[in-house]
Length: 77
Image (spheres, rainbow, N blue to C red):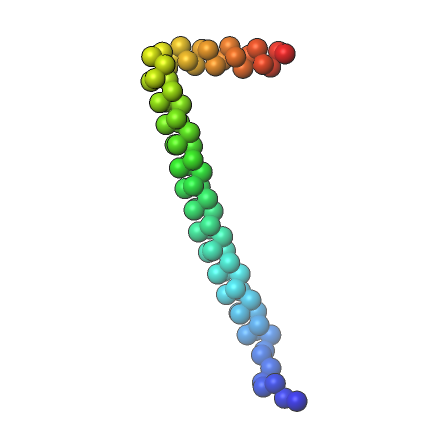
């Protein structure tokens, strides 16, 4: 049963290269979207911490020192 004319090796290579190029473009777009989402997540986390610092009435430097001391204690435990 005939399936039509066979593609030349050059045509197969060209088709495969086009597929790879399209996949690379898609991968770049997905990576960019992932970076945007990670940036958005980090910003929300920082906003939450900023709100907490503001509500506490403490200066950011004081909070940073408290956190540094806490981390130091946790690491030595």
